[in-house]
Length: 203
Image 1 (tube, helix red, strand yellow):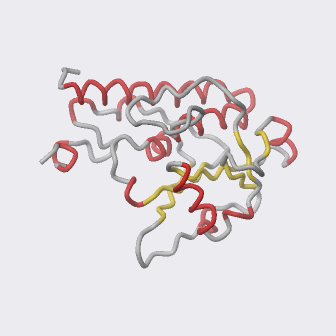
Image 2 (image 1 turned 90 degrees about the horizontal axis):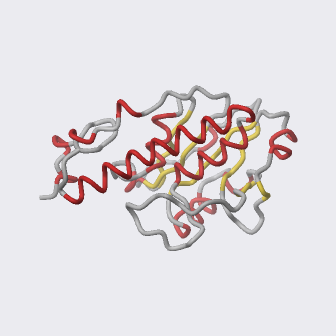
């Protein structure tokens, strides 16, 4: 049995092996922006899932689990009436996320982020009530993904935490670059420790 299937060998919070535990490296970022990560139920206990990791660093965030049989995926309970929720999704109808877009809503925006590959997130958008009516935004082209622990099928694809980091880099204004850097550094630590763990090396 692999160690991934032995929860007693892993930290219950970050899900990494105890020797490579990330918890001490997870920042506590208290932002006005609420980030709601919609995650497939099969991903919630995967150590390399970066959407869950992002919510651990973002104090004002939430996880909505999609795909549990018999359970309703209710996005509305996480939406705030005094702020406009934007869906971060690179669809054909998505508007480029800029500071001007944020200011259109008085700077009061939250972020809904479907977590998964392109096929899964497309299904989420169609199937989760309320998600398909949110204003949709996409990221400007940027540096290639630094996520090396899973294969990306699209060259422009990003890990969820990278996408959140870049979006907050825009939304959070003057504080944006620092927030983006903190999340990207957290992912870099996770990637390094995952690769060491897979190679059988010592931390």
